[in-house]
Image (cartoon, rainbow, N blue to C red):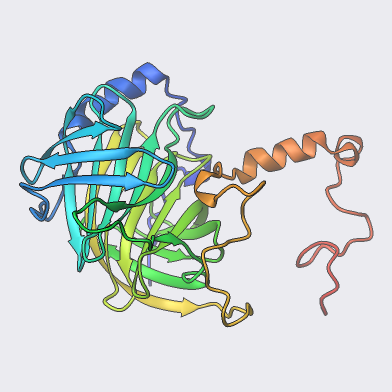
Length: 332
């Protein structure tokens, strides 16, 4: 008989501390040395220098002194020196670092075969809850002697509907489902115990037909960011996790993992609907600029603002059938 070790407090009941900016800055001092990694860093970037040019974003000039030390100059400014970690997945190299003395950093995916780059610019203290990791995605290229490539990585719906069981080298296992281009659903099989399902705003970036980048932030919970590159054919991943746990301890580590595909939800989009123009932006803005969607806070605000909700304690019409989605007309 299976025994599930449920935690005393499930994730949605943990009262995460409202950390101050100073508390976060103090905790990030240790992160200046770079993330930890169970299997060890890759030395793929050691001794190299790269200039990453992003579209309408920063130009990042990197010099990798060793497999765990780099210097960075942003838009031609003064160089900052920091620790970093890098892992490879075929042609891809993922590296991560924070900028010492700040609450900012970068998670970068390099496509070295095509000289392309996807940059996740990240920071803390950018929202009401300071512990929540914020991000903006920049697409660009690695400057070389040849003419800059016209191709770019981009947002995609090609992962929509897929589900995976991932096992990391850290011993952590998750079930993850990608039900939409805005959100993902995940079950922490080992970290918290239990079998509760949670969701978080997510990004999906297409590198090529086989390789993608996925990220999520646990908004309204710990605020932690998980990001990884994955190979659909090899069913492998390399990634990074950054944030604060339930005890307010810093989590900053890189991981590699193996997975298995557990299913695919049927999609009814046109066969050619797999481009990068996703219907999730407002006013023509790219999805990479969108703010995180927060269902709890957003729903509370909508309930408080809607006149009918202020007048009544009933969320739905009295004649709405309460099984399934209230008010739908599905057969019972």
